[in-house]
Length: 129
Image 1 (spheres, one colour):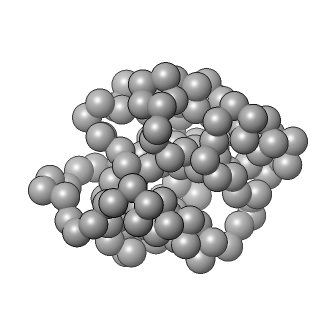
Image 2 (image 1 turned 180 degrees about the vertical axis):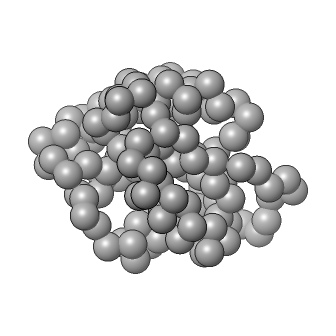
Image 3 (image 1 turned 135 degrees about the vertical axis):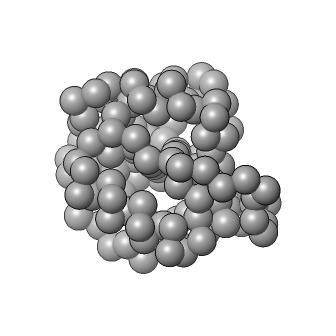
């Protein structure tokens, strides 16, 4: 199980992704924008960050740069409907990118690989939301 900070301004997509991730045993902090994510970053203690790129409340590129500044080795998955943005995110330092719409199984496989690679095993002591 991983602690995931999910940054997505589309309420329906954020809710759906949170539900799927939680169903697979992950602990989720979901926020509507990059500004909110940075404010909650320390409390969230994420193992993985998943962020959209284009958002009204602080964009994903800014969030990616701030997250990497706070914790350089933290895996960050960037999602977007624009392949150009995904290429830019990779150049900036995103660990993985996902083109929207994406297969949820692809997201789950990516998270599982990141969690396994980081040695995230078993449950964390405190759940959060």
